[in-house]
Length: 135
Image (cartoon, rainbow, N blue to C red; front, side, top):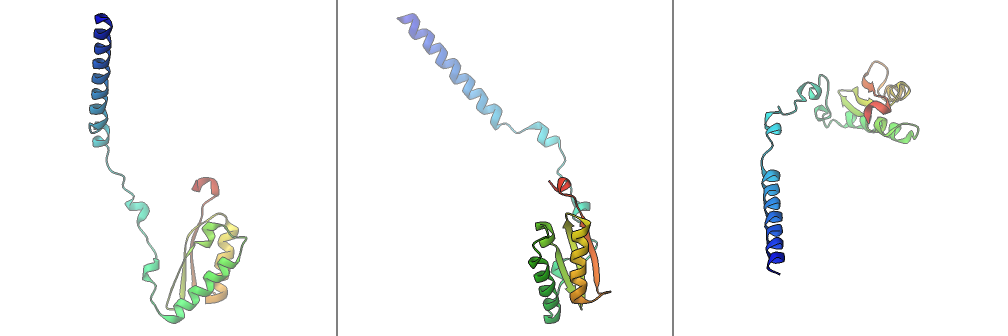
């Protein structure tokens, strides 16, 4: 009986040691993470054009944006990306930005904006990103 107690005592001590060692290994900071440089999206995040925060609260500009957004949202043939295109109106000039699934969607959105703001008053900054590239 003494041999059995000694063996189970040794086994439990060994198990405790393994558990304790694994806790230290898991809690230790990763050296690989310390050597990696943090991600830098500066170039990707730079915006060469208008942003939505640059739109003024001018009632006519807001009305133009609202009318274009309604036309886009009411078109159920457009993708979710197309429904979420950014529309920035400033002094009657509309800037469109964001990704869409196809060239057809890009053309449809630009036509809807031109219908409201007038030809020559729309800057089309929409880019086509096929579905498989966005996933």
